[in-house]
Length: 197
Length: 240
Length: 84
Image (tube, rainbow over all chains, first blue to last red; front, side, top):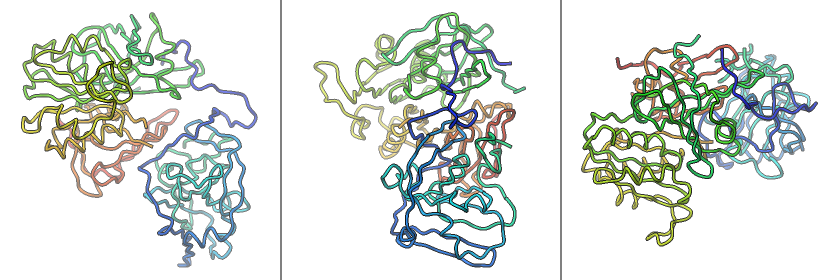
């Protein structure tokens, strides 16, 4: 049994209806990652969707951004307990990228430059819920925050919003990604506090 | 239950070492002592059960019931603001250790020792200097201490008193120097390392501790200067 | 973000191993490098930590601290040699 530390309360926890349980507000944008920051040049960058039919949809930087950027105003919630409210992003909707995808699988594995992976149900990427984000706060996305492009799925804990995103592979079952294999929740809904399994 | 249980120490004194850093002496009955360079994990527990754990180097070394840490404030940190700003005499502090047997100097080692500190990275190296002095070791010791300003030197008086024929201390001030200092403020460079440390030809054991960027630059330069990479031991504090 | 190094593993791994693991030699499954764990690169993204080979950068192990357990995955370590 631990002893209590007199006068220690951890980060200030506010009651704010926009804060999921166990989260605290931050104005900063903490940088957390499972590895070094890759330095990526948009001239060599590409993004691919691979399906079970053998189909590969591929976009280079210009092709991707030509699909049109949407403004996204959203809250983000990190499993390390910080939340940031009212952040402004711009990105390409996953709905557009999946328009021509031929798949009957219900799950995806997201792959990043640098080797990181994370798994999601396909339906969480559809219907205006997910973007390939290329701008944050009106500026190109910085490498430490996943630039040139990261996945943005703000309704789930932020480890699902893979930095330095490289592609998506369809999968038949919800096979776990990098952190999910070893303890992070397979789905990660911050409102149900799905941090671990 | 974990194999290595958490210990409880009682704060017997605290001292501000710099405007932002505090040394903390704990009384820990039954403490079996520590080797120079080891650290502990400190655990704080809030009343709602929330816990935070951080590693801190030990400034103390050898046997006895007293354990000494030195903690530098990280502004947006979670544990250091509590330890520096709130913790006071009589409080209890939970920790486990001593931890780590790699970044350690033992009094029986006779080869020369070069210590290189960046900021609060001096703490485990001070423990080595203390162990060196306490043991009467005749091994040649040298410390290169990179620090922003004179006011931010940890254990300034003690370092001055430990310095002598067997322990040479060189300061590099990166932001502001003392009046009349012969060099302008500036970062440690390969050239400074080459001129102010024990040469590779003497095969020193080297211990480098500080922020990650500092440690990586210094370690790379030391290898370029001819040191055997296996003789350069490093401990990184993170930071920017 | 900056990383720590394997010295920081001493505490968490003391919950699992009897001996200090910072002086243990680990062999990287990816490049074959054999080094003490103290030299590994540690990315602290608490509750998850990723430990990477200092030679090739591939993942040696991850661990995740949950509310009631510590999970360790040693996917990239093919051998551990612990000095006794």
